[in-house]
Length: 212
Length: 161
Image (cartoon, rainbow over all chains, first blue to last red; front, side, top):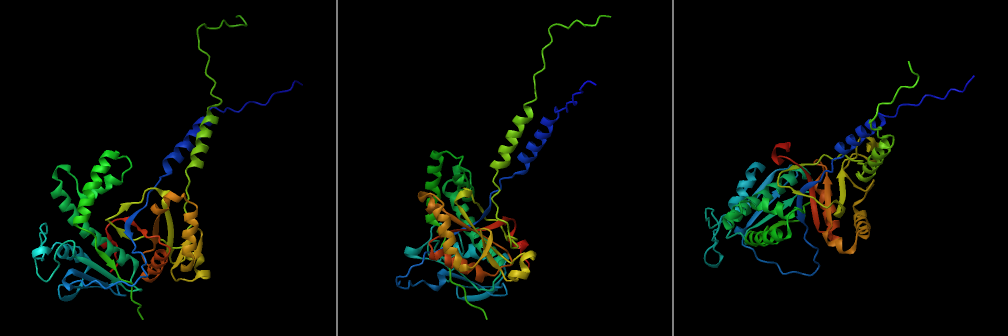
């Protein structure tokens, strides 16, 4: 008998299968970028430092206890505050502008309450939390405080540079974007710095207390 | 009937596509290999909290990840239910953080070290005590740029009160 050669497998659709896999991998690999709240920790300084005297009216003292409740001490009063009211309270405190003479705040639009903060530069937000505070509460508080700063920075940025047509946060995002040209970056950096100096984030975190 | 049909003239010979699968497979393998999914196998519950004032964390090669949370169900029997830290692929103590940071720094080029950011991926149920301990260790080794990694969303709504 004559040798019969094995029939050849049709490999024409192999390319299709491979393309299908290729497209699947191309689509499913999402290169996700994380996002979050950027903060800077204070460096450890061993040298004895003189205590700086800060007027009580310039401190917005927040305390989160182990039951995730918020205590606010500012302007001579102490009260329990809900997180949803925090942003408003922080903006009111930062924007108060109660200073007179040298401490007067030209750009503040607040109520000028003499018992609250003098100006943007003097106002300090202090946060203390308990070791048993839940992390999500802490993040929510941080978020609200950053939001308060951003709200004011947006306002002042738009007031200073109305022809730019963007807010501080948008400008900051644009500055961080690698696609932005270096000329625009230099331009933006100057403006961002100006606002950052005008409204510095003076946000101090005390080391937490131990709860029993 | 003639045994030999006369060939029609002028027809183009078909292009041989036999090597097409090879080319496509080559591309496929390239993509499969190049997309590094360097995600640590999480041994903890890692349900990140929500925040809306977020900034993007670009330049992944300049980020060091510290995970923290309760051990996930597979590891509960061995490691208990107290929130723990995970570095790379194993559970770690707070005291191991400086060594971890040093190792991460050693693997980067020297001029990039000041730009290194530590991303804290902490479970929303964790206590601040653990986070504070991590922060203290980071301060000791002068790794001051941190990022509380969160999901984008309304921080207040997600909060269980």
